[in-house]
Image (cartoon, rainbow, N blue to C red; front, side, top):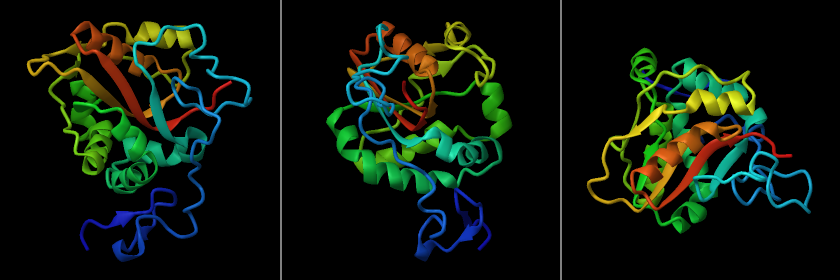
Length: 227
């Protein structure tokens, strides 16, 4: 009664017994369709292509990843999730990620789910880390523990929305620090809300491998289109 769930598309209050999204809105979030980039899972315009333009010719520090939605279809929803206090959207996102992505996630055979951390200043202002909420929902479906003590954000980065690929890479340099790997984690899944060029996840994966992690995968809620 006091903390109702809201539809992640139109933000109307929804009745738990009837689902986590309005029936009228259920078709609006678009799943990423095949063919996908074999590295980052962006939808490709051509069935002859194997990798998207961002992944072609690059040595990625992550093995591969998977994403649920086309970003354009959930842009406003994710904005509200991150910036307007709609942490409750994580319930719907998590349910959909478990339903659509769980076989792939289990196949990664990870030792831990590591959400992309926020800078402490941003975390204090927002009150929650949206990536950590998503990681918690994913963990419910696969049993892999969430570890927020492995990776820390040590440098406050600029918003990347209007940056090109090179600027994004420079912006993320030395943004993360691996605090410890005392249990010798071999395989980690990074969790984030949005994958665009992959600069954030790339920087995090590079730091984890520098710290001794053997394999790094990622799961993202949404991803842009590949070319």
